[in-house]
Image 1 (tube, one colour):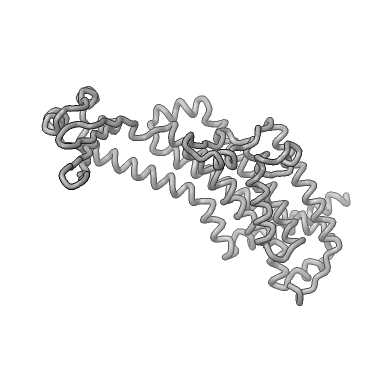
Image 2: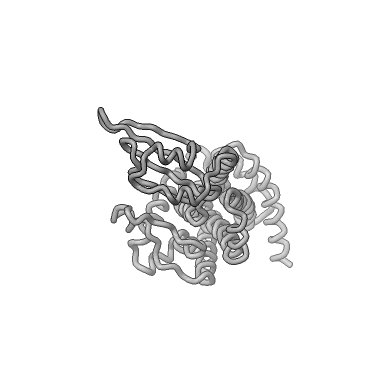
Length: 352
């Protein structure tokens, strides 16, 4: 009965805090971080759709474009393939001129580079490359969404749950209420977690949908019948679990330190050097477990510098069950430490 009453108290505190967390003016930049990838992929999709509409009446048969070879003259290319959908001219040196003619066969874009009136090269690529866009999405998710957006978004949400009340000189009202301090901690954490999970999971799913929108319908259908549902689930789940882990860390940090920049810098450095740490220390990182849950590994270009490849390369992943258990373990440990701290916390607004 006592436990049930405390859970009810924590739930009531979470309801009271939710509105403040969602509607606070200082939360605006958190929404912008969460929606930025969706805006990027939506812009790419709009650009692709506009190109397809603009080029729909100027499709050149694929057989004609395949017949263009190096050494063909510019006049011969235009005679066989017609006017390109776009033409770019440039000057190489004082006496040499070049052009790039772009053609569209309904699926592929063919760029023909012409120098001194002759075809110098031909580049054929899909106008919309589903595999490439999926890799770009994975890169965005690993390097921007997990390492920056969710990290700093949770910093802004959870650090302010207690630190913001201290700065506003209102925390003592909560301490005067007939509620245990660990219950207050649980209620505030639940509110922050609900807000962070809602914002960043929604942002991840919107970005995923925006990435799929301009793709070939047949390719999307095939993907959806195989890997699509699993990828969608784990992108959403890893976003939610990242909020779970980072939220607990920053909530505790808000009780322990006055300046949020210090824990942010320390934790960001710790997460960045995770790949260099011994196996035991790697397991003390939120990012280590979250990246083990993502469906597509972080892409690293083959031409990337060796140092960058070492810094960005993730450690060997663990199983999904181990990753979830590890994140829950880290979260419980950090919240237990925070509950010990809040039990001894004394308010002195003059030092804040």
